[in-house]
Image (cartoon, rainbow, N blue to C red; front, side, top):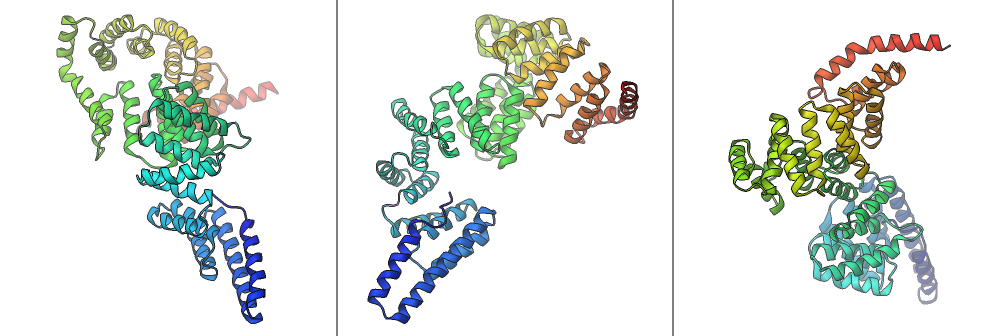
Length: 471
């Protein structure tokens, strides 16, 4: 968090200079004034470097400012922020503590230190600091956001979380709420199982910062809970590209892969996590319980207990690719038992696509679309069914929607390109083929890349011919 260039500090320097003129000899006064002005100059250079993202240079300038004028809380605070950005948390903590030591009533320093202490697991001390900061200034967005994080980490009960949410909601109506406040609000809403609220708030964060890891992870969770594997995976990819691959991104990607029937890939990903959480361990056990080697046992189980929803769900998912006709039956039975569970209906439709029963699949996904119009998995399956039925104009609309919602998905551009091509819309086909080639994976999409490269010269020629006729 940047502080504005100069404000309270300049006033303190002026006051210090005035006092020096009264109590010190003239030479000493001049020397003091030179030091303070030098400190200001270094601080401003640090701010410039900080704003440009040159954190190492910024830290150097802040330290020079502190050498010139050691009692400079703003420089300590900004030095701490720069150190924190470099993940040098222990040093950042010392800097924030020094800033607060120099100005013990500074709520901004309290919030920064409190937030870092929450991150480092020092919750008791953090709570004391954050409570004091909020009592002094209830509009302190950094402190309220950090307190929300603390409550989530300490697994506070619903009543406490709703009190925190009320404060976050009030701050989120400000003209310019911070990303931290909106991110905290989304996280609390998600913990309170208000998925619609969490989704809406996380989208506000994405509008401000498309690379927000926290917002993308919440959106991934909500999408996957809604059985939208494609959309969920796209948010996981966004989170990974903004930061790094973590155990949590691996877990969510594994959930998406499993929904798509790629159980072996999901299991391998989960087993690559060095220190698995309970959720990961449970998921590994659950996948292994439904292993292909155990499918016969599961089938025998549902013969004995026809209403075993867990077994039916596993059989619906696991047979989708290898034996879609069996999957159709198990998905149907699961849907009858839990008619309001969207994932069963989506699994049933996906099995219909795998079984090449495209007409029935298209009809089902049309109905599901009225229930969940933003579900990318429904859109992808509907587009595939329509495409296979050669209903290219209708398929085109679904794949266009997917390219708008998932601009990094090569498959959507590939099928959209073919749809335009089949409809004689060669300029549009050309544009989408080119986009596909830019996004495609050289190994994974090798066959499709070859097909497009073979087709491109003809499409270019047809586009030129159509352009000349149009003239």
